[in-house]
Every structure is written in structure tokens, then in C-alpha cells.
Image 1 (cartoon, helix red, strand yellow):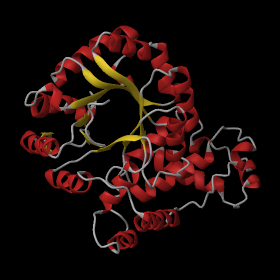
Image 2 (image 1 turned 45 degrees about the vertical axis):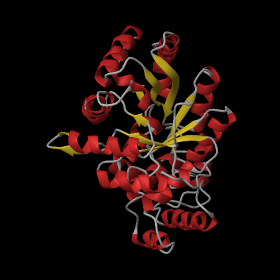
Image 3 (image 1 turned 135 degrees about the horizontal axis):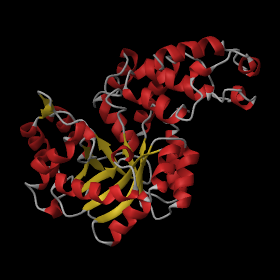
Length: 369
């Protein structure tokens, strides 16, 4: 990890595109600017951009610069293998796609309760550690999308994991659907360096409601993205903050405030808190996540507060994350909003007196059509 020069990384999930292909000339300019500014950490995955991200980095980075100039991370994605025997051939294809002999970091991708069970069944963690022992991986870790208790289970069972990549931003910090703060605290508890993904929440924290834009505008300088990225990078134990930049202009903006990084000062933290309050005020469902409705024993095992939090995220951000958390985290084992049998036990327990049965109909309409 000592080869990492600074705490800002180039995420290759949103590279510039042109006519359905990666815009290689623009990507080369972005790679050059990134390295010239003193940064060296690049993050990709085999499936990013429909399989075009790793080859793009080969074309724009690894074939143009000596290996010691950059740190390269990729991931083992569960949908790309079926058995333990598939993993090593997949890994070899990733080395070839990226044009390297080893990866600096190799992450177990998108770990959740269900994915973790599958990875364990296929001995994916063990295989990655074997590849590390063979010198083909420098560091093994995981990227994570689930509740903090699942992350604690993984790190308890696999203490060999060296880093954890989590979704972490000021909008998700106390969001009960994402548990950004709680996941960060689990990483700190286990002494694992944190890699931050989605610091700008897929660009949504760069395109704020007008009221929130006014709060940051009153500070007299800095883009909305700058406050989001600096918020995440200022936490103790955060080794790296990734930004999925899609054009040269985004790269230049990010480099302008991360080249000589400084954490948010008190005035800026207060502004972020006001923007967080603006987001909270826009929630369509005033659920406090007390979980009384769940504790009373929903017969359909619907995680009502989590589904409401995801619904609110959809209305606020209109991004892919809401669908992911709805389908892959909170309802993967059942308990969809449409499963509600309208028994009313939840409403009797709700201290906010929410019309939960009606709201679940809205959630099902949004996510299950």
C-alpha cells in the first residue's frame, strides 16, 4: 500500500463514451492529467462498461506507462463465475485484458449476504489469497453493498482482508438503507483501510436541488462535487476516495481541490449539515426507521423501513442505486413490498401513524413493475 501516492483515485466505471465505445483519446488525456498531478490509483472491474473498462485502461494506461507509475485495482464479480474452477481462468483473462502481470489490489466484488455465501461456496476468498501468495496479487480486499452486520461477519470470518471499499457520502451517511456511517465504523473497528466509492453518489451530489446549491454557493467557491469528495476524504482511516470521472472537465475540477487536499473546515461542515437537512426534508415518507413495524413480526418478513428508505432515495436521486438496494440487498430473499397481505400489524405498531399498507403499494408500483 506504500506505493499509493495520494488519497484520490480514478474510477473507470464512467469513462467518456463515443458511439458506444470508450473515447480513448479523451481517456488518455485524463490518465495523463491524473498522473501528472501526482496521483496513481486506478480502479476498474471486468464488467464495467460492458467489458470495455479493463481494455481501455490497457490502451490508455498500462501500455503507455511503466508498471511502477500506477496502482491498479480490479475485482472478482460473482456473475462471471459459477464454480471454484472458473476463477483462475477468469483472473488470467483480467490480467490479459488489463495488460499486466499482477494486480495491486483484487477485491471480492459487491459483497452482500447472498454474494458472500456464494463466494464462500466457491472458495473465492481462498483462491484470491492463493493468488496473492503466488505474487499475482499484492493486496486482497472486498467491495461491499449491504448492512453493517454483514460486513462485520465477513471481516470476522476473513481477517486476511486488507481493505474494504464502501459506498460513503454525506447523503448516505445515516441512511438506513445504505448504513454508510455504520459500515465505516465496522471498518475502523477491524482496523481496515477504507476505499470510498460513490462519494458524489453517482453524480447526484454534483447536481443538487436549487436550495442546496445556494448553501454551497454562499461559501464563495468550490463545486458541489468538491464538498462531497472532501467530506469523504476527511475521515480518519480513509485510504482512498474514488471518482468516476466522465470527461476532462470533471478531471480538472477534481484535481483542482484534491491535488493539495485539505479536509472540510468548520464552516464547510456546517454547510454540508444544512444540505443534509435539505435532503432529509425532501423525503416523501417520514419514516424514522424505529423498526417497530418489523419488530412486531411482519408475517411476510418485509423490511419496511429499508424499503421506504430506498423509495426516498429513488425520489431524491433517480439513480441505479435505489434499484440495486431494493432488488439485490433488501428483497433478494423475499419480502418485497408487493408481498404485503395488508394485515395491518405494522400500522398498529408505527409511532408515526404512517399508512404503511398504502405506502407499500406505492413502493411496489415503483420497483416491481
